[in-house]
Length: 347
Image (cartoon, rainbow, N blue to C red; front, side, top):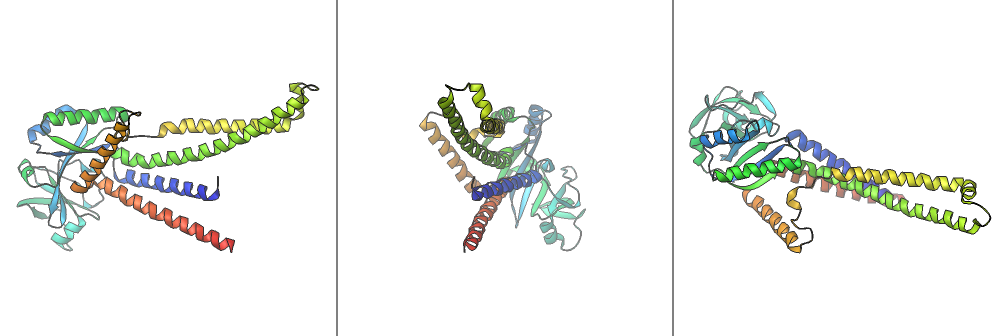
């Protein structure tokens, strides 16, 4: 491979590996966001508890409050994503009306005073602040059925499961069916592992490109060397046996065998790497041989894109977009720097 291609491949692998580690450090890869319309009552929450049994889930209602992001939650947000608690702790309790707020919110309401254990009023309800989150404009308050009728911008059920991919998607479908029977309309699902594993898929594809490029070149070399050996034997087969010919050309034969072994190792590497690709079901057409299946798939993903533009992007989608833009800028800058260095050396 050319030096330029090798550098680009290494850069892509480093950036994608960094992106995956970054998202994993913030978001739980076992989470799925189910965006819904309608209201969930206390009775329906108890019904979900029975249905999901030991499975963990969290319900969030989000809206703008003044210049901040108000989140009404059932209290398991720390299992969904990392929250850097600056002061106090994450303690959401509806019985004693506790809240956890961002440091930007605390600066506004309490100025320079420590906000922990102080009282804050949100939507005419008083809460005791139990924790302050670093670099945040969020206000977390406990779930209150009376507040579900307010004009919430976003309503999300965060579902957590450690099952493998196939069972994982079956569980999500089962939950969607259950919510539908409760007359709760789930109109969008965001699977965290798809966003996080997307970077690993790119790494796998780059590694496959490297291995297959080397393998193709090596196979061409092996063909040439074997042809030389075979043609040489054809010329001498009347005066020498195959064994004697191989022995007399043992250096050539050894080199060819060595390259064959390397080619087998590369092929084994391809065989081992391909299963590492984790392709989400929403990008696989129902019928691989039907044009209409591909058109339907494109329309589905386009509609999802428009839906996100209209209703806003999830936090993990926003972070993924920021990472992708950053990586594109770094890649373009690196290529331009490389070309500039090459020009200077040429002069």
